[in-house]
Length: 486
Image (cartoon, rainbow, N blue to C red; front, side, top):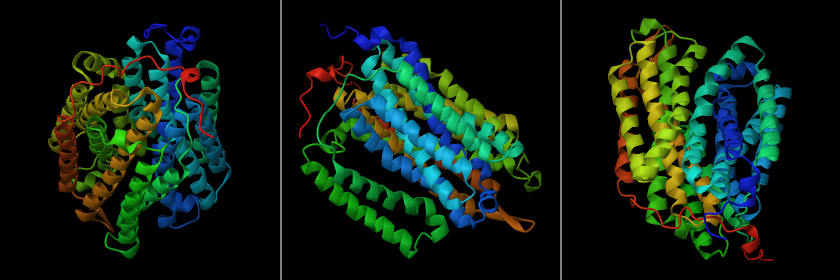
């Protein structure tokens, strides 16, 4: 059969329907990251706990997402990408129901961790699109799927804020349970099983090592401001992460079927794309942390706009919508000039948005414009990353490689959270009985965001301009793969 011939699943299911369902799943999953942002200040009272414990409602989601995403990718390559998406939705629904039924901080933390464990559905969906769609539709479809990582968070924030302000907070989680159930049903009906497999033994030791290493790295980054950056827990965990990752690298290089193929990951295109992903993830999350605070500060500061969380979310929403609307543009740029050029163009737009924001933050329309420009750049950049990854790895490793790339973006967002929190907490002025960030603090955060985007541009410039000639080759059916080792 010629390499360009469609598979059986391609002819039996509409590519548009497959994309619509997978994009819907991506939006729902990414919504989990900002779901409780409107409740941050109210969580201690709602859960009858202290602020430090309540913060784990957010931290647990991040840690679970980081630990599970690369594992889900590898399991998808080995057994079934579609099945792993369904399992991801089961985690999301179970976690949502647990949170909806409980007022206990422990149960809500566990439920939020289960919601975070669903994040692997996005890279799995990207890999299914590469495996099952006709070659000429893959670029545009991947651009749409990639944009869902920002769309869900940006659009979900005002919806979550509205629900939290007008209804019982448990309704947020009941809504998530319903959405997760709808996604699972749609995936079961409309998404075909990928024909591409990479059978072998699952690397349990590698999964445990990666999980311990990531938790040891991300936990002090996210909690360092509370614990103290020079405290024993912070430095001890960072030191542990170095030791664990060193041992993990040695183990993965000696394993026949590693969780992460480090030899492929160390290749120049993959390594530099992942490095640029960390920096772009940093740039994306920087605006999500700073802009809502700026909008909600009281006018008495001289620069705050005194808006509600709902209005702050609405100002951020156009950026998420633009991400989706620019998907065809991103695909066109990639098809014509290559994904490296697309990534570079996106980082330039991000940097431009931050630089404009450093001087324009006096009115709502100015801040909305800045957030929209940054969102446009994020959408273009994110759309290019899976194309770069899939152009540099074998088709049978796409889910694992995309999972690792998604992990790099999460690491970038974690660093952004730490850095922006440090800046905003370190440059304050008194306002009544409290301290609030100064105008200069926000300018500095915008300049840091621009710097991260420009660093991503520099890294992207060294990515090889051409992908492998066989990057878009039609996947090998599972029947043609060797049998799994026993």
